[in-house]
Amino acid sequence: MTLPVTALTAAIVAIMLLITAIDTVRQRLRARAAFGDASDSRLIMASRSHGNLAEHGPIVVIMIALLEMVPVNHMALTGVAIFFLAARALHIIGIYAPISTRPPLPRLLGVIGTWLTMAVLILWILYLVVTVNG
Image (cartoon, rainbow, N blue to C red; front, side):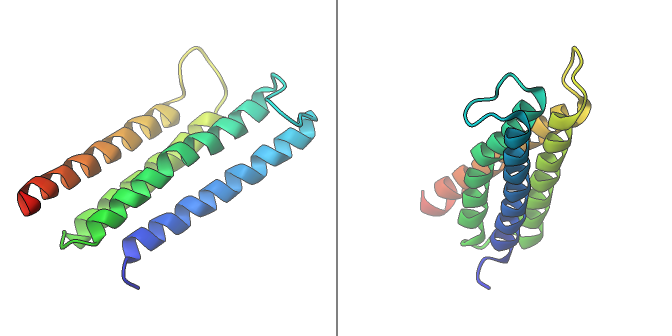
């Protein structure tokens, strides 16, 4: 396989998307809500866990693929991909955590981990664009 890190990352993101989509439909059926969230907290949690992953997953997978197509440190890229997947798993766990006055720690760590991953990938790509093509 030409892009093994990308392929594995995309497959795991797809599994996470499928699981969160199934739960969203399950919660939608339970709440009898064809559209919207019916102000149902479990449906909102399921929908947001799926939607947030759908918002962040594709661009990260694309950036990993772009980096994997040029000669970069394979182990470092694998580490970044694992960090991203762990952050997304924490975010999903945190979304489902009991609601209090503050966001649950796993959700906070998931958000920060996702943003750190994106920042690292953005900077890595910009560095390569400037140094390799500049």
